[in-house]
Structures are given as C-alpha cells and as structure tokens.
Length: 120
Length: 108
Image 1 (cartoon, rainbow over the protein chains, first blue to last red):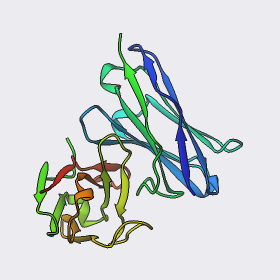
Image 2 (cartoon, rainbow over the protein chains, first blue to last red; image 1 turned 180 degrees about the vertical axis):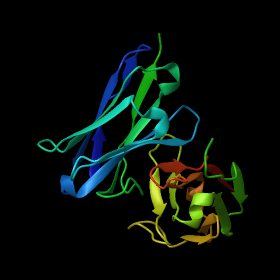
Image 3 (cartoon, chains in turn green, red; image 1 turned 30 degrees about the vertical axis):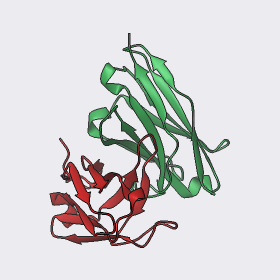
Image 4 (cartoon, rainbow over the protein chains, first blue to last red; image 1 turned 60 degrees about the horizontal axis):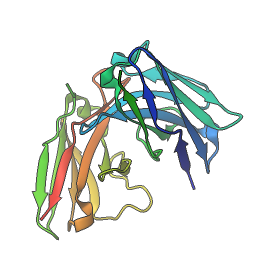
C-alpha cells in the first residue's frame, strides 16, 4: 500500500533553514507528484508547492516563492522540502501528499506530518 | 485571505444529513476536493472530481457543485464523522492550489 514517511521533528532558530524528507513506498515513484501542505498550530491547511517526480517540474505558492525548494531523489524514492530564512510564523506541521504526476492536487495519500518549530 | 470560503462550524444530529459548502469564483472552472481531518491526524481525501470517493470512504459522503459553490454532503452522519473538513481547488490563475478555511463539524 502507498506510504509516505516523513522525517522527524525539527527545532530551528529564526533565519535558519530546514530540510524535511518524505520517503515514498508502495507505488512507482515517478508515476506521481508530491505536494507539500503546512498547518500552523490551531489553523487551517496551506498549500506550499508541488513537484512532479516524473520530470521534476515544480510549482510554488506565491507567498513562499524564493524561500522554498523541492527536490527528488529517485534512487531512494524520496522528496525533500527545504525552507529558508525561517520566521516564527513558519512554525507548523508540514505534510507531504501524493498527487497526479501532472497536477498539484487532489492529495491522495498523506505523510504523518513533521512539526517544525521556529524559536529563538 | 483564502479564495475559498467555508462556514467555520456546522452541526448535525446523529443520523441526519448535513451539507458543508465551499464558495469561490474558481469553482466555476475547477472541481473542489474535500478532506476530513481529525485532531492530531493527517487529513484524508474523501471526495475528488465531480463526485468521486477514494477506496475505503463510505458512500454516505458525496459531492456536488453548482455555480461558484461546491458542497460535501454526509447522508446519515455518524459520530465518527465529527472532524474538520477542508475544501481545496485552484486559485483564480488556475496555477496554484488553495484551501478553504475549514469547517468544524459537530455531530450531536
């Protein structure tokens, strides 16, 4: 069955970077895309961006453009999300979710979430 | 602010039918998807496309759309349906994904 397993919780200082991984199993990695969605404490869901594991095409939310990078490692079926210049309002649970190889949504399967805390 | 608008909270009596709505101009061009999220858990896709349910989602969940409004209907709500529900679709450019603010469903 499809599984997305994310890396563990992180604590970072303002201005630092964080890199979260999402390891996929149970399907052909390059036949799908991966979107990243975050959820601040007590708040709703926010889409961050998407990468096609087929051709590496990416698409990002405007407010995060320039601060977020998505990459894939097809040798390990892993997608990485790096967020730079962290601020306190980046504190959130970060989810990866599988999508069509051609479209950033809908989100079929979700990872378990990774809590990123930004605090001085 | 979100380009998709949901009521913050809705309640339904056990076994009754409830409709959760999502409004936005982009819904005239794109279908909404719906996600159920229970406390401390990742969201789960319950409806996508015109009215499609992923495997394992009970058939009491259905979706519909009219004009700028998409709806998620739960026919015969169960206690386990108490959760937050989020819609998503595309923004006005069609290039990006946006979520509604979420609806907290209480089953009385």
